[in-house]
Every structure is written in C-alpha cells, then in structure tokens.
Length: 277
Length: 339
Image 1 (cartoon, rainbow over the protein chains, first blue to last red):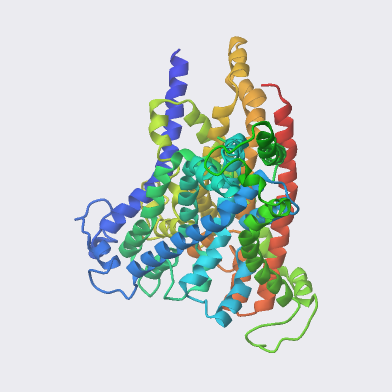
Image 2 (image 1 turned 135 degrees about the vertical axis):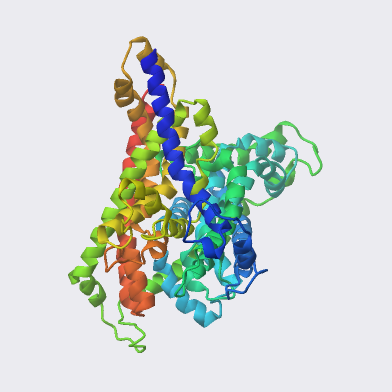
C-alpha cells in the first residue's frame, strides 16, 4: 500500500513538473510585462510592478511608433470577417456533403482538407503578385479572403460531421409537415447544430487570429495583425523586453478566453473530427 | 479522409433517399392538405432541380476553392520560368529550377534539418503527450485542476510562443540561464549554436503542441471500454503489462491521428523558427519553408523559391496520403476488435 501511495505521489509530481514547464512561460511574461524598464536586467524576482508597458503598448504612454491597438483591431476585423464568410459559404457545403453523395463530393472534401496540410508559402507568392495587381495587398478584403484557407476547411469538415450525426428523420418529418427543403434546413437542421456552429466558429476564429504567415507577407501596415505586430518591439538596436512581453500577453487574451469557453468541443475541432468525442 | 467518414457518408445518403421519397408516399397514403403549406410543397419542386440542389449548395465553396487553386496553379506555372527581381523578363527554363534544387547541397541540408525537426518534435510530443494523458487519466485532484489549463499553450499563436521563449532563452539576461546558474550552467548559448538552435526550436514546438497530443490521447483513453482493464486487474496483471498489451494497442488509433497531424505540420514549420532563430546561426535551422521564404521574399528569386515550395508541398501531400491510408487500416483493425 505504501508503495502504491509513493507511486501516486510520484505521478502527481511528474504531472506538476510538466505543468510548470507549460505554465511558467506565461507567468514569466506577466512578470516581465510588469517590470519597469530600468529594472529589466537587474534583479529578477524583486521589482516594483508598473503598468507602464501596457500603457505604452496600448498607446497611452510614450509613442514607440508601433500602432499596436490598430494591429489588434485589424486582427479582430479580419478574423471575424473570415469566420463570418466561411460560415455563410461553409454551412451549405457541409450540409450538402453530409446529406447527399454527389459526383465530386469526396474530391471536393479532400481538396478542402488538403488546404490544412499545404505549406502556406506555396500559394502566398503567387497571391502576393496577384494582390499587388488587384490592389488587395495590405487590405482587409485580401486578408479575409486568404484566411478562408484556414477557416473554411475547419468549418466544412467539422460541421459536416455534426450534420451527419443529425438524424435525417427530423427533416423528413418537417417535409411531411409541409416545410420546403429550405425551411427544413433553416428551421430544423440549423437550430439543432447551433452548439456545433458556436464551437467551430470560435475555434476557426482562434486559428485565424493566430495565423502568422499570411499577414507577414500579404500586409505591410494598414491590415497588419497582432501576430506580426508583436515582433515589432523586438526590432531595433535595443529589444524592448517588457513591451514585447506586454504585447505578447495582450495578443493572446482573445484566443485564450475563447478556448476556455469551448474547451468541451476542442477535441473534435482540433482533429477535424477524426476523433469523435 | 478515413474509413469512418466513408461509413457515415454511406448511411447519410441511404437515409437521404428515404427523405426524398417520403413526401410522395405520405401524400398518397394520406391525401388532403396538412400543415401550413400542404404535403405537396416538396414534391412540387421538379426532380431536376432537386438533383441539382447539392451542387448549388457547394458552389460558393467550390468557387472559393477555385480562387485558391488558381494561385496554386499560377505558382506551379511560375516555376518553369526564371522569374526573379533581377530578371523581370523571365525566360522559359522548363524544369531547370527543380534540377538546380535537387543538385544543390543546401536543399539537402534543409531537407535534413526539416526531417530532424519534424521527427524530433513528433516523437517527443507523442511520448510526452501520452504520458501526460495517462497521468491525467488517473484523475486525482491535482490532475483535475491541471486539466483545465492544459490547452493554454496550444491557444497561443506559435509565433508568440517563439517570442516568449526567445526572451526566456537569452544567454545573458534570459530567465532560463538565470535559473540554471546555481547549477553551474548559467552561460548556455541556447539559440546561438547550431545544435542548440535546433533543440530550442523543437522545445518551443513541444511546448506549444504537446497539449494537442495529450488532449486527443485523453479523449481516446476515456472512450476505451472498461471490461478488458477490469479483467486484467482481476488477473493481477502488472501496470506495464496492461499498458503494453491493452492500453497502447487500443489507444494507438487515437494517438496516431495526433501524430499524423503533428508530423505533417512540423514538416512545414515556419513561424516558430522565423521568430526564434530566423534560420540561424548560419544555416543550421533553415527548414524548407524558411529556405523558400528566404529565396522568394528576401532574395526575390521568385521562381526558385516557389520551386522549393512545390517540392515541399509534394512531400507533405505524399506523406499525408501514406499516413492517412495507414490510419484507415489501423482504425479498421481497431473497429474489428470486439468491445
């Protein structure tokens, strides 16, 4: 019995060790972001905390020439735009793929999924050239369009499995009641998968928000997002650690908050429905 | 993608036939208006329009797919020219770019670094992720509390994670060396030596993505049937025997999904390395996607950089096909095991 208790304590200890590794960096960023600039490199754990870094990053303090709030708003606009558009386009496609087997349906689905695994740079260089010609470079429309590569496959694949889990008899009953197919979709099927839509939208938003390569190459200033913007404070001859830490923390707040609200649905989303739970 | 999707699909289309056929039968059996619009509402839609319906629903997605496939095709087309900033009037060079890539030693160096990174990250994440999942599955108080924050690193953008680690790994002022100083290890040049830079970037990948493996493995563990484990416990089987003969074989299909995702994503790693080492020191962490970025964007040799990307795309695509087929076989076998 003592042996088992010792093993139990060892297991808990190992778990705590892993979580120290997992959580320490975030805690350290909080500490770093609260340090005054002159104490950054001196003592490590004792300092007089200040919110100056946040004031600077969010634009109320001295100007560092990095419009971080603007980047934050840009991230919001393009991520929300991409998710909204993906829902409008993706929900009908997911429904069709779940309810009908039609010529090319599997190919279309696989093509969509293959976007998930394609290296981003493959399309980004031609897109860069195209965007320059079409005037989409460094614009919201351009970013929203390209972020579909991230959000649409996610939404179609997951919503397809939600629709497939729904018994077709429900819509059948609606048709018997005299609904048209369209009404059956909007009034019966769609309300029933609402939790799925909510979860997948949040997950798609997080993925779009966290994307780095697209804004790095397809934006320069007007539509630049936080993932690229957070790097700005590291540039120059004197990297500003406290500002970088504050910017990093501010930029992870939205995805973290959303993730905590959809924790229950995460598994299905992260694995594109390959593991059902 | 896999066999279970295939099965879902078959069931859905069979049911659909019933949906489409139902209104006719119903109205024949029970004539007269029923409901607001009457049972004829669906039947009044001509058959050709009904058969067209799924296509209409996917048209927007199709257009968008085309909108992305077009630049992909364009990219493929560019690779047979020598298009570059220094050569704005490109000549048709055929497969010359590819020939140059495969005869260039820096390509093979990059390919090697990429494979080291992908295999290293996938292996460490699998072992660590499964271990964390097993520990959490014991469901002690500590486990239940920690499980809530498991996803935290996963939701942080990898580039932000790399920035965080870059700050922590600074040789002179970083907190990692500060904490190691009492052990006489205060001066490690984490990202300034070739091996250190590669290991550091793998460590960041592990930090970000281990929770992904752990979450999928935990979901798998929780869906395993209880009876084989109860039987093993009755027989007095050791923990190691149970793990090797029961847990791992049954869990493997779930873990494999995570491994495939992680391996294929690591093959095309970009953001972590871009923010942590920018490929340095020297060329030591120039993975294929970084090499393509440097060639195409930094040095503006568009066609040459694109050819790198097409090669990487082909490798990832082939790897995906092989791994997904293997996954399908494993899942089929798992489905045959009576539960």
